[in-house]
Amino acid sequence: MTAVFRVGLVRLVSRAAQSPNLLQAQINGLPAAFQRCSISGKTMRGGPRVPKAAPYPYKTKKYNVISSFFDKTSTRFDENSKVICVEGPIASGKTKFAQELAEELDMQYYPAVDLDLIYINSYGFDLRKLDPELPPSCRSYDIRNFCQDPNHDLAAQFQIRMYMLRYSQYIDALQHILSTGQGVVLERSPYSDFVFMEAMFRQGYISRGARSVYNELRQNTIGELLKPHLVIYLDRPVEAVKKEIKARNVDYEVQSKVFSDAYLRDVEMLYKQQYLKDISTHAELLIYDWTAGGETEVVVEDIERIDFAQFEADSHNKKMLDWRFHLENEWTEARIKYCSEKSDLMNYFNVPRFDVPELLRSADDSKVWRDVWYNAPGMKFRPGYNADMGDSGLLTKTKMGINEAI
Image 1: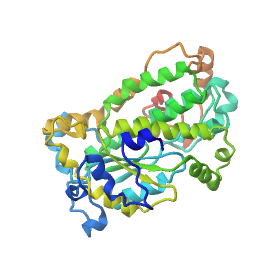
Image 2 (image 1 turned 120 degrees about the horizontal axis):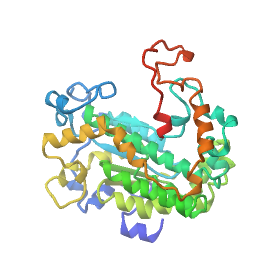
Image 3 (image 1 turned 90 degrees about the horizontal axis):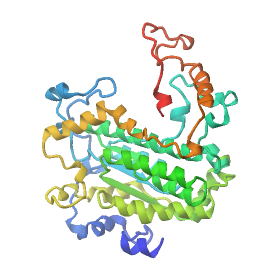
Image 4 (image 1 turned 90 degrees about the vertical axis):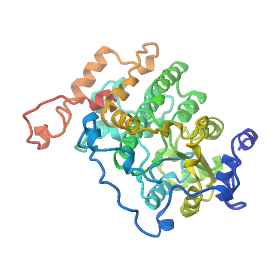
């Protein structure tokens, strides 16, 4: 860790040397004794949570102004209605920790996104099988391809798609918390995605033009979201990351040209000197030395000591500002935005930029792609209307547009 981060943001607390229970107090500038419980885990409650109103079926039923007269938003909230993002370098143990944390806090877990969400359709058909029929500019390119050939022209498009998927998932998480009152735990978020794009640029994997397109897209979209309440960073030094990559023995990771010392150090520095510093002005921040792993219950104890309500009385404090709605109609507007207007939010990615060759396809290539892609199994019509996949609902034959938009 650099001296700048150690002094300027927050002191990294080694679990072997000092209890991390004091870390949140240091961030708030208050003694640990003054930290009051907010979020509570199962162990602390000693039993199940008091039942709330039934969750709104937001996945099957739209929420609009009329719905708001009969279904209020804030009445479902409790101390655990929070957004928690788990961050950290590659192979730092985020998945196991985030799952255990969500289980202990009775929250919904959202795993890290990958391009399977685009390439595997709702019938389970892997669209990457179509690559031999497609021109090079239209073929698939996922994390495996990036690890094997990071200098490929499709590398920039890959990271832009990762950002879009994280953005889409974060909207889904906001839908969930606003419709059910249940908190959410996400493994990474759209707020930290720029770390990887910037590291790719510094290593020469993408062009300056592609980086500028990404930054323009991010500027266009990120302000539409509500920032997380809490960010937990699992710190693991570069040598430990490399050791873990070797230990988990994923072939394309072990043999990758990407995970060099230089790339991993760039990721670490960007996380600590930019992302964590910026997000700490809004969200609470806990950082742990996770070199040898850690105990989830200890982190839960630290979370239970955070008083999220302390910022509501100070109107000039930026912390939790996005969630400082005082009127029910403000909650209603936010809920309608994320539950019923997701397509509008995703449209903000349509930035007309035609000056970056690796992000463009020729008209001829696009035609081939459409002809092949939309004649693949389960891709001719919307799910439920594809006779070739055994569907019987053929009265409405509407072309699919979801994958094309992404």
